[in-house]
Amino acid sequence: MYPDVEVSASSDATLEEFARAVRANQQGLRTSLKPSYDFIVCGSGSSGSVVARRLAENPDATVLLLEAGGWDETAAVTDPLSWPANLGSERDWAFQTRPSPHLNGRSLLWSMGKVLGGGSSINVMIWSRGHKNDWDRFAAETGDAGWSYESVLGIYRRIEDWHGEPDVARRGVGGLVFVQPAPDPGPVAPAMLEGARSLGVPTFADQNGAMMEGEGGCALANLRIRDGKRLSVFRTYAYPYMDQPNLTVLTDALVTRVVFEGRRAVGVDVVLDGETRRFGAGCEVVLSLGAIHTPKVLMQFGVGDEEELGRFGIEVMQHLPGVGRNLQEHALLAGCVWEYEHPLAPCNNACEATLFWKSDPGLDAPDMQILQAEVALLSPEAAARLETPPPADGWSMLPGVVRPQSRGRLRLTGASPSDPLDIEAGILAEPADLRAMLACVELCREIGNSAALRPFAKREVIPGDLRGPALESFVRDAIVPYWHQTCTAKMGRDPMAVVDGALRVHGIESLRIADGSVLPRVTTGNTMAPCVVVGERAAAMIRESQAS
Ligand SMILES: Cc1cc2nc3c(=O)[nH]c(=O)nc-3n(C[C@H](O)[C@H](O)[C@H](O)COP(=O)(O)OP(=O)(O)OC[C@H]3O[C@@H](n4cnc5c(N)ncnc54)[C@H](O)[C@@H]3O)c2cc1C
Image (tube, rainbow, N blue to C red; front, side, top):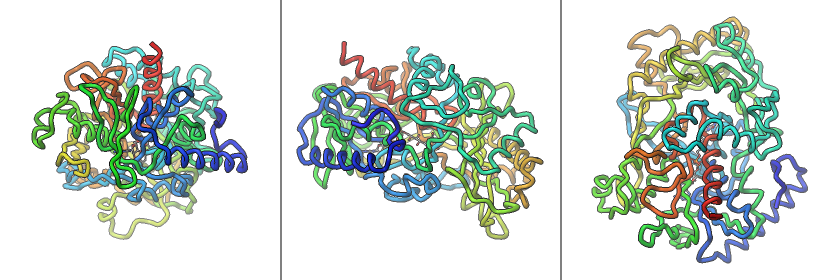
């Protein structure tokens, strides 16, 4: 087993030796699969990798981790600047949303990772812990103080290995999760901080910590990159245990249903090497398939809205009308672009500075997030508005609405696992979100055109001084996915809740959900770090229940 440090911190020879041990161990485990394991964790993404690792830390427990995607050993995963190469590739589920009147009739390619590590292997690597009052609200909704900010701060401090300005009260060192502010950033990133400051937005040495306990501010992004390589949650958590006999990780293993005895989950059906196989779970099954596939699998084995299930003749095991509802996503706009005065190569993940601020001072927390990108990012429809092709060398300010009022919904189109979902993303469905986005575009233009960024800007390419309905139509054309699909099996105590505060599916035994679906409201900022917290809490609660 690898020691409790980031695997990437070790020498190449040690890593190669460990990789050989992992391959040999996993090949052996795959050829001698057991009919039953103590725990089955479905999905190896930002939450599932954590659950599997923490459960496998007990050498007496056997853990089966099932992943529909393949291995992650490719430059598109490891090289931080190559993340866009994963979009639409075999490492992407590449969901397609229903065309939306709120996006001028457009449908979006809604990527989610289909590879060991899930989203954490294809994402932009920003570590955003959420705002203090996100967590306090989760505690209030579940009645479980374990979800409060104070409690979750303890988890973050325990798991993190923070390499930024020390902040003993808020940031931990020596934990599993290496995080640092963008190292050696390109010059446009600090210029964004200066531009924000000139407009009265305070700047911080850390985008998490104090900045996300109050009004917000602007900072270099916290990144999960070390020595020029991505650190996925899978590599940090599950991989170091893959030379152990009690953790079996199966790739190309599609979970199609949970198997029951009465109301108790006792196993899963999996398509493996073209055949359906059944594995038993002696203790618990954990669904960590992400916010699209977890509700899909739930509905297909009879947990969901009885009316919806009835449309496809699915026998109802538990009527839970919240399954697939409350779908949330941040709104992101790719259409605020400047041409570089002198072209500069992008650094790190090409998104090195971020800002959180309120669109209305009366709000209780920031509802806008701006990311700076060191490349020109434009939706195809925004690009089509230009009279000349977009500049080859440009940089962008990406406005985002991160406290959306809008909600989407997932619906089945059939009872079979191969039937796609009908995905109504809901982005900008509520006028309040459009208003917040308009304010955020305005702020992006003010910062982008500020004196601090002038040395980098030959010209503002788009949007320019659009107003009124023209600006609204531009916004609807320029929305792109933020890939923060969440909240479709939320935790809580109201009739729309799917799991309780301990992440147990209401009305079902031995089945928990641990992934982005359980968040009652999408957190303020990128969603990987909160999914890691969900994984940590799920594992801790499972271990506790087994001990009692
Ligand atoms: C392109 C992109 C960029 C992003 N950028 C950032 C960022 O910079 N920072 C940030 O914080 N967040 C980012 N995110 C979001 C973040 O990665 C996700 O919110 C997070 O990974 C969700 O974790 P999860 O555990 O809920 O699901 P996932 O990480 O998606 O994991 C689910 C896993 O389950 C597997 N699975 C699904 N269905 C099945 C099945 N039937 N059988 C077996 N396995 C299955 C999937 O293949 C996947 O590996 C980004 C996401 C994407 C796609």
